[in-house]
Amino acid sequence: MGLGYVGLSTTVTMATKFETVGVDIDRRRVDELSAGKVPIHEKGLKTLLAKGLSSGRLKFSSQAFDLGSADAIFVAVGTPSSPDGSIDLSQVRKAATDIGGLVRVSSGKPLVIMRSTVVPGTLSTVVKPLIEETSGKKSGAGFWLCSNPEFLREGSAIADSLRPTRIVLGAAESGSMSSAKALYRKFYGRRTPQMVLTSPEGAELIKYGSNSYLAAKVSLINLLANLSETFPGTDINDVALGIGLDPRIGKQFLQAGPGFGGSCFGKDLKALSAYLRQMALDPSMLESVLRINDFQPSHVVALADAAVGSLAGKTVAVLGIAFKAETSDTRDSRSIPLIRGLLDKGAVVKAYDPVATLPESLRGAAQAKSLRDCLDGADLAITMTAWKEFQKVRPAEFARLMRSPTLVDARRIYDPAAYSKVLKYFAIGRGGNGPG
Ligand code: UGA
Image 1 (cartoon, rainbow, N blue to C red):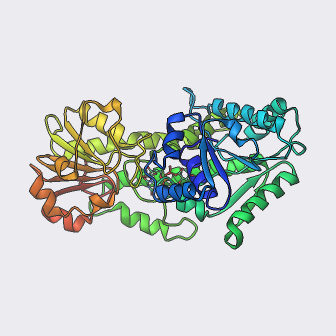
Image 2 (cartoon, rainbow, N blue to C red):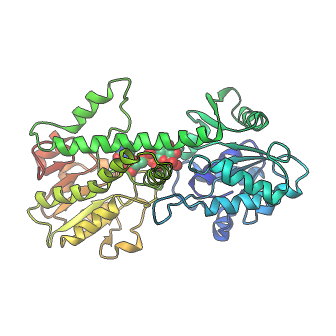
Image 3 (cartoon, rainbow, N blue to C red):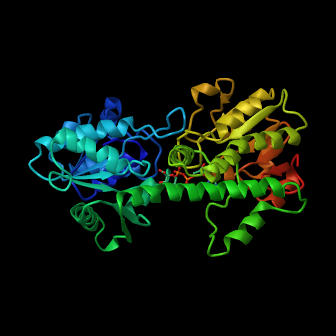
């Protein structure tokens, strides 16, 4: 139920083994998927979708009713932020009510698996009572209920679904746990990863804990990157390596840049902060992580301004519109506040992305048709995502296409030694180059 990134990846993955129906209220999406068209850029999705459809195991529907005879129902509906940052559970409530209707008439005992990210207590105090109320049946008697958060990264969501690092299951009754374990053992067989078995609240916390930790790593390295810029000869990449080689810390998620974006980190940290406040606990650590992240695009604008003297009237090429490489998703992309900041400073902005398009809200900027078109005649280029296409651009090519070849490498995708020989090269976290 719910065919966003998580629901769709789960659906096509499950269809490699099981009869699977993907349900979404968006009829257009259902029609497109039924015709084999993918609505998002996600590696491997098109192939698995085609395989599932041709095998006859995979179907799509806009009617929850079509899940009536399912042995297991995955809930993967959206959990957006309310205006005050707290979690908006309206789609979860609707899904639970629909499932209650299915359980009511079911002759079996379906397993309901909660994949959507929800604050601790949601499964037990919102989902369970709603299903019980609508179905007239009790959890453990008329249906099984389990929390099972996902750890899929956009861009590698299919690979992550086929080879997860762990399976987290949170259930109140042993029958629900056994049923969920059996489903996954049947699916993954000998390749079943380690399972973490806990309470529903434990599982819900693991999801928020994982995203909070990853976001905190990114904000910490960005804070240190900005500080590194004040010390000539200091480079954040060396600092990150020195920190990350400690096995207690690890090298991943220490890549300095314009901050984290996407549909998860910001939303989840805000939801957990609001929830902590509600529980009279201190959310300030998470709030700092968010504050550092909010600041980072304006820091890139300041670097850009200093790089060209003043941005007013300058043509700026922004490389990357999506929130990271390998996705078309622009939700919470750092390129959005960056482009707004550049426009506010009077720059003329052209942006290019291999698959993403500029959101409506950025009408003041132009979408370039190609990378070459974007760089052509620009005074300054800023790298905002690490697409391979961008990584391949040689310094001489920048110099040939641009009016005044100046580069702000906000994603740190180029070798400073090679690029600074040919271009005016500035980078996040590189001492002696920034406004300080
Ligand atoms: C994230 C988590 O990584 C998944 O485990 C989780 O399941 C998912 O959220 C979710 O909650 O559904 P995703 O948002 O797809 O996945 O993207 P990430 O690869 O985690 O990147 C998030 C942001 O952090 C991106 O903007 C990325 O560019 C940035 N980032 C990441 C850095 O700036 N530096 C790094 O070192 C790593």
